[in-house]
Amino acid sequence: MIDLAFGKTGGLLPAIAQDAATGEVLMLAYINRESWEKSLATGEVHYWSRSRQELWHKGGTSGHVQKIKAIYVDCDNDTVLFKVEQVGGAACHTGMKSCFYRRVEGQELVSEGAPVFDPRKVYGK
Amino acid sequence: MIDLAFGKTGGLLPAIAQDAATGEVLMLAYINRESWEKSLATGEVHYWSRSRQELWHKGGTSGHVQKIKAIYVDCDNDTVLFKVEQVGGAACHTGMKSCFYRRVEGQELVSEGAPVFDPRKVYGK
Image 1 (spheres, helix red, strand yellow):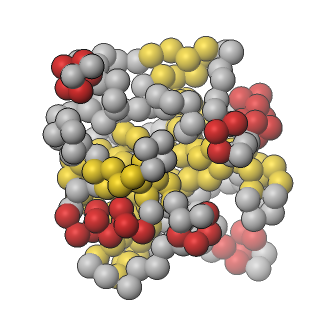
Image 2 (cartoon, each protein chain N blue to C red; image 1 turned 30 degrees about the vertical axis):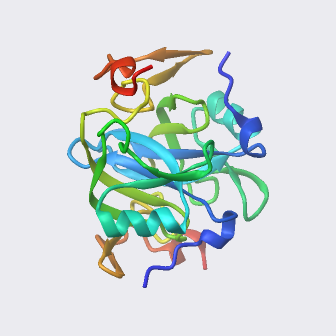
């Protein structure tokens, strides 16, 4: 039995999604026990949406699910690393592959790369 | 000016350290404004220790500092990704390279790899 430290931080733990093939860090979001168990059961990453306060099946709307290739747990059981295949090629709601597409340059953030999809088309906004 | 969302979560944001050369995710810890500014100013990662409630210069005791090669900020300004050179070759207090050295296999966690250093020698415990 894998005992994650959900009790430590009010029920939510950070979860990192990393591209299993390239090693690129795609995003960080949060999981609660329900989303953890759902991820294990389905093989697709489920987070807990803090803004919507609900179970969040990543890609449930866009089809851009994260297929789990491997899961790692850190040394004190309070962070999870999902190695995934990112369907659709992009994890970020902006259409960028990774949510970490802005690099610190001095006092500025500079965008790198180009969007993989047009979020207006995918989300209908 | 880079405006991280420290106000969103009580002053602490998660920060991921990733090996700049290999892409391996090394650890996740937390930063507050002070540790963020200290990291920018020194070029070495500073976290905020939640257990000790103090500024934590990673490697300050062991010498295994994290030299910052690049910093990325996520799309909603509430997570930071440090790409680092991990001095000493290991980020984890157990002596393993990464804190994410245990893989989920069914209902178990299975350790992968071998320690880079002996923590009893490095920390004198």
